[in-house]
Image 1 (tube, rainbow, N blue to C red):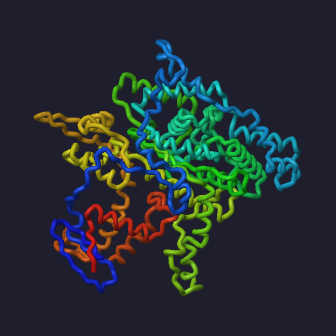
Image 2: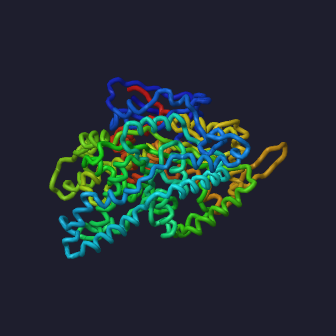
Image 3: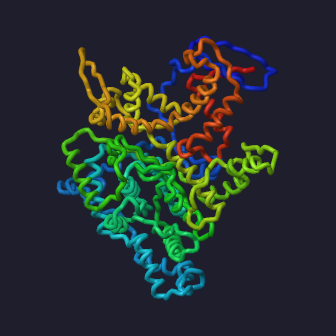
Length: 633
């Protein structure tokens, strides 16, 4: 098979049945191509199926064929019909009455069960190093355990939860036009909850509001109070005390100390007991697998991996039979707390600072008819036990590229290994509490697998498409907006909007009015110009949401450009005058080098996918979009 990069309808066809190598043809790479995409209309791709390779049983059992027929619901739309009462007064108090009718399970003996945990009792009795038998008084150890437990969590306050749910519902209705949730996806989650295993939601992290919005969405759908693993670095002590009453969980700073530290042993034992009690009681848990927004560094959160590692450890040791993992993605038209200046300092959010920010946001939204939309996507649940068994049986022999090549560099081995079968594509990070090395590798693979599924299932919002068109200086916004929407759907990604094109464009531009300038010209035409400075930075941040959609094409285009760079004279034009032959093996090597150079948190390749499969997907995308044309040899 040969592949040709074309810039005209007529392409040269060659056939050689004796050839063993795929070749690629290039003529005019970088020139604008004409491509015809099928009309998708109202039909949108279903996203979020769990991995058929790693979890085949969950693929079949936790999926409904008819879920696409159920449609979307607006979670924050609460009316008189959502309460048991009717009447004029009920219509004005429906938010408060709705919050009173929500079921809030209470567990007053949770702290006692944690204190009676075997690991904690061994420390209190001195049967393990670092306990009361290591020169510390039992009363002092007991007080230290209670202090650590108080830092991690607190007893839920039902009255406070109901008041906060009412206030949050009122606030969300004034901040957002709607919060969309697919009813079929929620039906899958309810079916998984009926299996008896505790639910663990693993989410992306777009805004500081996620820690309030996602628990509210799940609480409003009858899943109970969701415990949320939050980052203590983003909260002041006063705000942390409030969030613990609302279901927040915080990891003690000393839990990551070295293994020979008694404080670290105590903290890890108490955290482990708290997670065991939480999962054994069947309460849902929410973990953010991405770093908090605006934080520099890698995308995958070390704190999220630590919490997920505790869940994996509890299941592996048989304390609970299984846990059901649910990837979650959230997409905003406009991120509520995103500043125009991205270089501000990352100070912890205080209680009064947060309250002033809420009042300021309400003041800005008062009387504004143009509000943003939010899409919450719940991917297909899958069994943690099933994933663990399949992962260990398939990937135990994999190693990192450094370990594979080190013996060859040191001269200890002259045989080049088969990196396709032996390479581990998940680079190691810091220690995840006291997990063994193989368990750490399992947690890293699982985290990358789930985050990849969450990012792939996240809806593309209208502001991201409009920001991309404005940055690329497209002239005909309406036509290009429709084209880019269909290209997004064609690649298996969903969009978080619908409606008439002209009304949709007007709504999107009204949301971006602080970042663009609207100029009216003759005959009713409208010229849209991005504002320089912080406005361009904000548009660039919005356009990043389209990167996963076209990431394969971007990697393939860079690979082809790298190969052509050595064939075009430095002083000559980039556009090739004739057809250029490219080898499949050359492209594979070029793409593999890019995979090693680019950050893995950007690419998010699935651990169960081999490197050559990823290369083939990149080439298939280039063929699909018309940049490469296959030809048999």
